[in-house]
Image 1 (cartoon, rainbow, N blue to C red):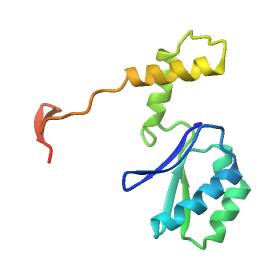
Image 2 (cartoon, rainbow, N blue to C red; image 1 turned 90 degrees about the horizontal axis):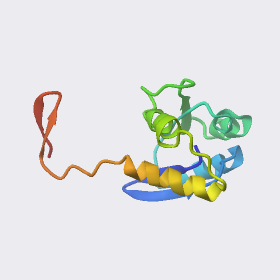
Image 3 (tube, rainbow, N blue to C red; image 1 turned 90 degrees about the vertical axis):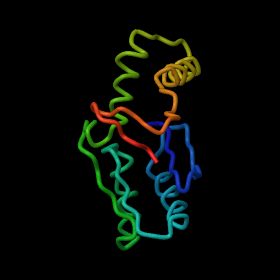
Length: 135
């Protein structure tokens, strides 16, 4: 994933649009900790930069204040964004051959936006045949 975001109290703490390396992850975690002021459990996919010795070394140095749990290789039930990436690759961008990276970026964002549903603005939603009242 090329975009790392962390949200706390509706505020975006960081956004990076490049391939993130282990050292950048450590810096991000260091910046995140003071914002949260409590123990942190990070759930990551099994990307190499998430489980490398640099990241593990930093997490070990926090003496349990920051821990990590790794998801299984392809686990859409545990990491629902996998469904989105699969849809984007296999359907929205199928047979699309951009000439430039900028063209891929623009088209991917456009297709992702087209797949969004408008927010629900009413208080009652029909879910699995039952009315659910939203407060």
